[in-house]
Length: 379
Image 1: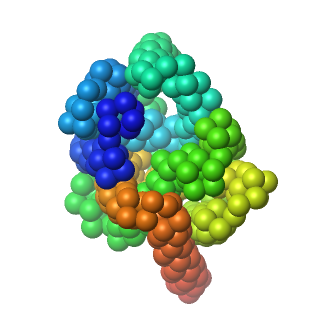
Image 2: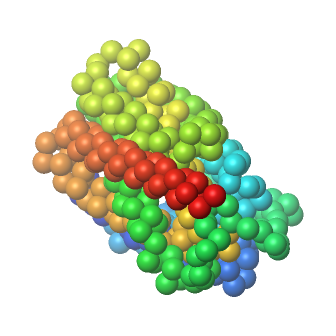
């Protein structure tokens, strides 16, 4: 698409940012629509918006049309992903919530595998192959709308449910928007999510280009490596969601972000195909861990009914990171004609997020110990 309509890397950065602006707009309001009309309707309407965006992209002739199409993709993506993850978690208790959301997140990995294998083959067929790719993806999305219409169910009734993460002596209405916006834990989770939104985008957006232009790999090998990451990422949400259920959300999240920091640094200095494959694979094993744990963590701190609104709120931070990332990394790539600087920058942003998670985990442990002592003193 870049070559087909003559975009430079700076314009590609703006096109990518348009997707995340659309995503930001969507996640800011999607929680309210879920509460009002239910997740199923919101998801299918959002998928329809995605199809419209794909069809616009398939017929794009210039930069401005591409921006509009990708903007709609962002709106639809936010409107479908937030309620979908909330819906997955709503059917399970906090003890298994991370695992459940992680299984649902596996769908993102399946999408990466399909796109990593299918799209390069279609693009190779002709100069207009990228347009055919958009049409095919729109068709696949239409199938999922049909499947959702037949099988997707809204959240179960939450009668008589006591939220285990909240003390019984709290008088605040946890379903209220003001409570969500005043919750310091939710804000902290949001800032951590911002760091990952900035960091992971270099890997997911520029990995293939990095392998092709910096390391000199063929398009086929680069696509294969991307598919390896996607295949391994299918299990990433399940693995790390389960770990977070057992060891704690912030502990697991700090481990994920520190692993990603290490892999991005290693990827920026490695030239051996075997080492690069291992690094890409390890990163893939953590790829969807962060949104999985984020969804579960938010559900720990607010009532079940308020989860879509709270998740939409913290995802605003994530979207800000996604908007800033392509602009900053696009400029670096344009100035240096290399991806090295972008990888290093994203690695250290990931490190900052990991440190914040460790601090939050330590704070939570101290608070839990204090609460235990207070309860013991009253016995």
